[in-house]
Image (cartoon, rainbow, N blue to C red; front, side):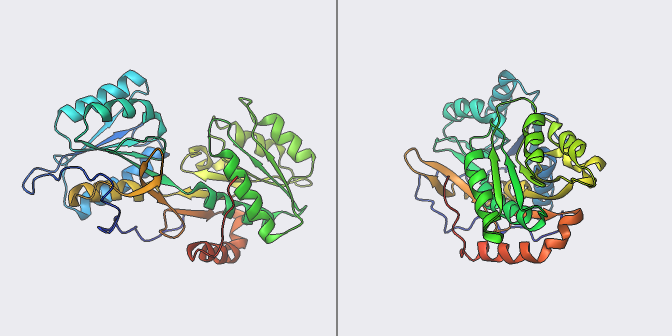
Length: 338
């Protein structure tokens, strides 16, 4: 993954009028907790990405283990809620939950402790005043994936395979198609969101129809990579664009033969900002959605929280991705809603 500058923390000019919680006393000890998802550090996925931001924040803000506590869930709903309640009762004034797996438990526990600030990384579904959602602009990532797919396609046929468990899949598919057609207006785009537990049948059908580059946000399992590798041949190649860090299996050596790029979500920026905000008493960010109101921040190409990492044959298209990223950053590309 290409290196980049760390994001600046949320500015004081954010919309604090939207229900700013009571400020902590200036002399009160800093007590921040990170509730990792299953696996914790070392998972090579969401938790590891978050941990990078945690470590940098601790270093830059001169925090210790006495200030920042880290816990890992076993993945059950009961355990998630139990750990959040434990941290709240132990006096942690900001609790950061990693991943959408905490959605239900956080809905419950945050209302039991209305004076505690909760952050949830990579989930934007909770409309509660003391919960801040730190999410990523998946449509921008999908648009860039479409640009790369169309640029790399030799047969002018590209595909999007969506994960049916993700509510954002239809919007991501539409953004992918828009990005692809911005490069090659006549490119044929196939969009499929199967309900199957395996992507094998869908990928095979795409490949038989002539698709030679596929973008997928499939998170169910690593069968996506296995299927693409199996279908990829010299006379009829099939290349893959994925999502990091969600699809942790893309980091395996097996992916080198087919992977040309990945929509990258910089979760380390979100965890860094969550800690910085807690230390500097800026707990509430933008209004992401109204009626019901959802608060937090959506990271984008503009602030470096979203990007497209290129690898292998995808590196040949660095110039076009850089150019389109600059247009997105400048607000010169409007991505249509699905």
